[in-house]
Length: 113
Image 1: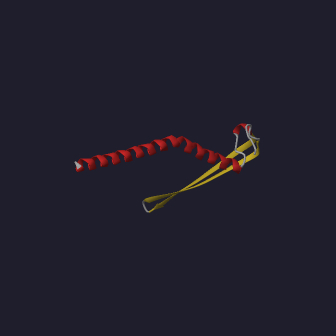
Image 2 (image 1 turned 90 degrees about the vertical axis):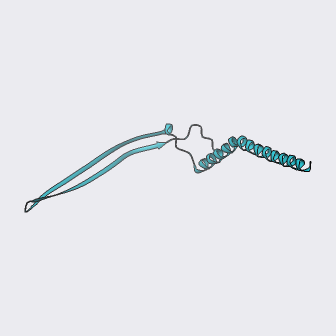
Image 3 (image 1 turned 90 degrees about the horizontal axis):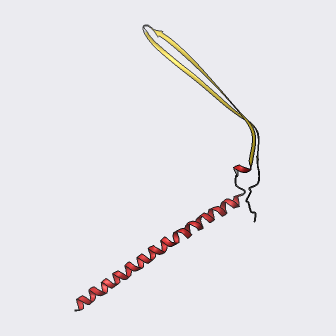
């Protein structure tokens, strides 16, 4: 009889622990959305403290870009008593030039504190 009572008590403790663990898991799943929103809010607050963010709709630009590339290839063939040796040297130069202006306007929905 005593042994049966101990088994029931252990089963009851096991069941209680399982219920507590399930409640903790359900609470963490329910809090997941709130924790995610809190982290996103903190990131947004940090980004806003840096300054106004880039808005492509408020940006105008007038620019000209020029690309120039030059490739020089020098090939030399040397005949050494019946064997032919070929050396090839290539030089590549590239330049990029950008001229013009770019103006970034204020954000349309910006709120300053």
